[in-house]
Length: 187
Image (cartoon, rainbow, N blue to C red):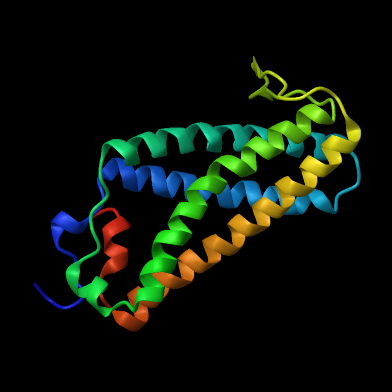
């Protein structure tokens, strides 16, 4: 095998790849819409985007459950021995810690958004069809606090995503160890 190629047994399954990339696009889209909404005046267009943001959050939550179930029932491939041997202990710790914290935030961010929406008295009707239960009673102060936690956790997730992407690019373009190919569809 040539340098930079990944052995087939160290690649993720097609289902894991699909869940990874669909969630990546959905999360980045939801974060982008959330940032855009912060500076917008109240309007019908803003209300529409708020609903889209909520729908995306609930969809991300559902896909995250599916992804976690898949991950728990399908062990991910181990890092290739050459890659793991070349990583200092702090990088291995960062690798595992970043992944674990991102998984936690895949749940925390949308759940805090849902709770904030409930506390503010704005129910979520997923795609305008399925009314979801409120998590908490209406309490504007609690809603503001939960909204702040939702925003903080979304920023934290954004920072971790940036770190994750930077590490993947480092492995691809500096280390040239083929690690990125583990999550890339195709050969």
